[in-house]
View 1 (cartoon, one colour):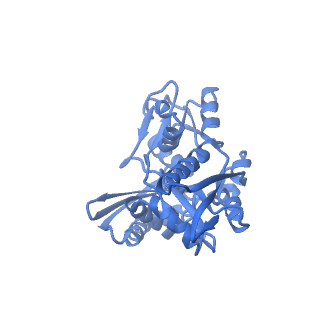
View 2 (tube, one colour; view 1 turned 90 degrees about the vertical axis):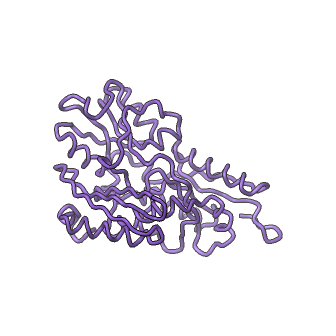
View 3 (cartoon, one colour; view 1 turned 45 degrees about the horizontal axis):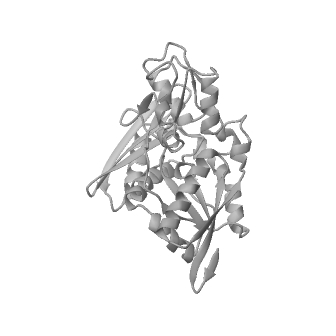
Length: 313
């Protein structure tokens, strides 16, 4: 960060090195340059443990927060001013000393089935191999197609597509937004969408993280904040927080605004046997936290507690 005459004229963005992370960060950088002509924006690419360890699931490694730690350390050391994340990867509670400066307008929230020979989930043959390491996706796949063989799939989008093309899987499940951002939208065989299929909380949204109390940086990033997306993802994340959701728990949520009304659908599932518990609530868009809490309570009342880890770890 460089400040001249009370105004910042340079900003450094910490980012993961995967193609999708770099796309998202370049997107944020360009948006900031447009919003603030003359602002110099530089990328600081870093490797994270979540990117480096690909032979174990995120749940086993400790969760998606592994994608954030190195970026936060770079900000603490003064090597970067902000970090760009997929909001679905951001833990429900940030580490002390950090805050979300902006949530950008959400792209496509849905999941995608990608297969070279089969056009839809229903078209997959009995016992087909489907790749995904997401417990949320596994739970919904087991509920819809208990006959499928679900196989772990880690790595960036390009790597996952290459494994599919090499014949290791009959189909894989990825996020529509990531495919579209990298120019692979044509690879989508079927869009898996609500109400039958729910995405990860905040899927499709990009977030900007900064040091808490860094008013100059927050002011710069405010130009990119999207109120509609912040409300919807706020409700989804509030539901997840109330359930102590993480990579260890198959939790899904999708909020939609209808005028001043906010509607939230939530789901907790079992990646083992495909048991699914659903909940729904609606209310004022002015209180997304309350709606998220209401859906969490509805899920627990419907029996979701039996699907959550002991003591909500």
